[in-house]
Length: 89
Image 1 (cartoon, rainbow, N blue to C red):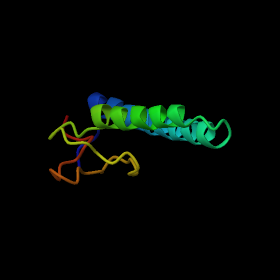
Image 2: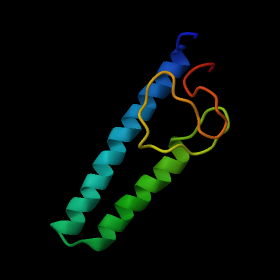
Image 3: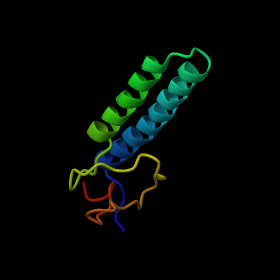
Image 4: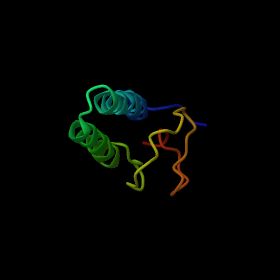
């Protein structure tokens, strides 16, 4: 196995940050729905998260959207093109 390059490490860091942002957005949507009874805000937050997922969380090789709930480690492969996501960049 080859080691991660700087670009691969940066992409891995970006994906981890996005996963944290996704959790925060879903938590805010749940809070606004349950406690504030603000349904439009909850819908907007969920749509924003889905939009960010489709634009930012993609395979660098084939460009397909990845599932943001997957665990991230160095040997993760894309389920569509079967290439290593963080290696070979």
